Amino acid sequence: MILPPATLGMLGGGQLGRFFVVAAHELGYRVIVLDPDAQSPAGRIADQHLVAAYDDPDALNRMAESCAAVTTEFENVPAGSLAYLSKFLPVRPCAEAVAISQNRSAEKGFLNQHGFPHAPYADVRSDADIAEANEELFPGILKVARFGYDGKGQVRVASRDAALLAFRQLKNEPCELEQMLPLDYEISVVLARDETGQVKCFPVAENSHRHGILDVSIVPARTSGCTAAQLPNAAQELAEGIAREMGYVGTLAVEFFVVRGQLVVNEMAPRPHNSGHYSIDACITNQFEQQVRALTGLPLGEARAHSAAVMVNLLGDLWYLRDPHHAHEPDWAQLLAVPNLKLHLYGKHHARPGRKMGHFTVIGDDAQQVQESALAARRLIGIEDDSAGN
Image 1 (spheres, rainbow, N blue to C red):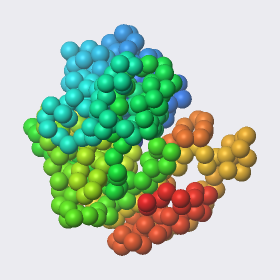
Image 2: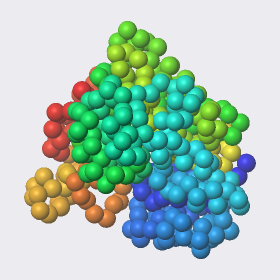
Image 3: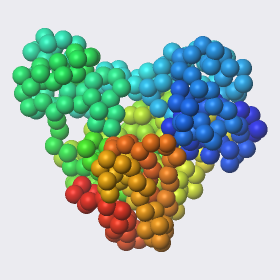
Image 4: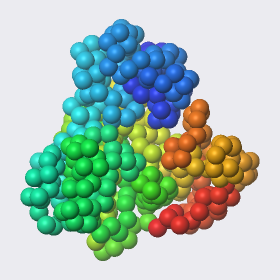
């Protein structure tokens, strides 16, 4: 067990790292952040910010010398850096688990190997792979195997010819061709697992997206269909099984499609997740404190929600509503006047369309009233209702 005031290391300086720093500081730890961006949100509030590449040998050695344990805030940190640090100190999650989650091919292979439900797919490394792909994969989605997130690196393809064209548009990068499924809706499970195998699952969130980016998360999820009553428990059991098979230690998110009332694993993230942000305001212990606890060997906290919640993402587009050419700060006073609304801004130095700049969460005892209040708050600052809650 690593106790305060030990120093913890964080690879990555975005908003997830920032919330980790806050949680670690509240528990009495110091934090060193490694991130190449001198203005990174987490680096700006950490005890020390190493401005260097994630695979910089000098920076990694400084973390090895100064930290008692190290974690990561996103899956695209080089797994090799985590493996190197693990020679000197605990690294949670381990490099092997991160490597599975940062490559769609490895992720789908893992799900297939262990019998977890997933969409039909094919590895694509050449035109021949598309030519030989099963006809059931069309219409489908061609996704780059590495570095795709928030809808980036994905192209919908209705036919084999369209897939060949998309493959060239993606510069012949290794891809996955995945069957497009008839979605009922999407949900996610965020959990924490410690070194002994104990697991604490947060309540299941129902998620809606806009342009491939998470827009709204609703807790409790409004499950529907023939297996609706069993869906949350089934999703949590599948997520726990994935964590167990990976030997995972830390906070893990698993996204699911619900297809004709059945669960299909979409992808997993080896870190806290955007859809788990509601836990900051609505749960006894939030996902970032659990990340600190799992990293340091402290007992996991209670993940139960004490309120219904709706989390709304605030993207950089809001800064350009008044003038498409110049950024203007939104009128936060309108949001802050809403009862039971909690605003979280990430301290990013530049707003741009599609960039996650913050979020707000509305909490309360009545789930329907919370949802109505959250959607009304979205309208106050100019977010249209075309996708929310659908």
